[in-house]
Image 1 (cartoon, rainbow, N blue to C red):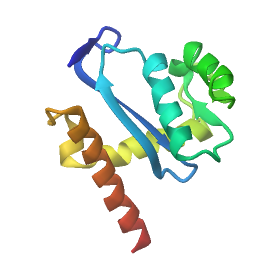
Image 2: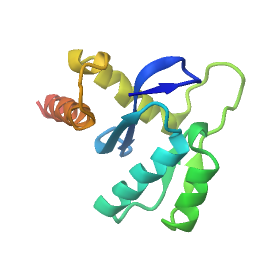
Image 3: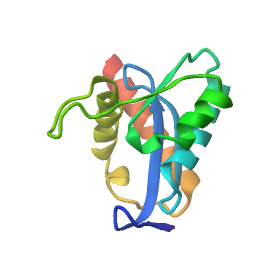
Length: 139
């Protein structure tokens, strides 16, 4: 467990990579005291290893600088950072896909709070929830 000084919470952070329809490609859970740019690089690297045909990534401003440099230099893929258009609430099309997926995951009892003791169990619960969501879309 870690402590994220910015969010003032104890627990874990979840990083997911989804396609344009919101289907889960990669998930990584880690202690919240690790910065997003460092752990985001590992998630993007794992995603590219599993899906080598990906041409580009999109992310929010939390993944700027070192994650962006890692993507350009190490992975040879562009990382498009979404920026705010206004200082008020506005829907950002590409980023909204990930936020919507997190909202879907929040509807599951085991994912709405941090119940899991092991990080691997937390990742597996996210995968199980996405399997259920995908099956529900097919029916």
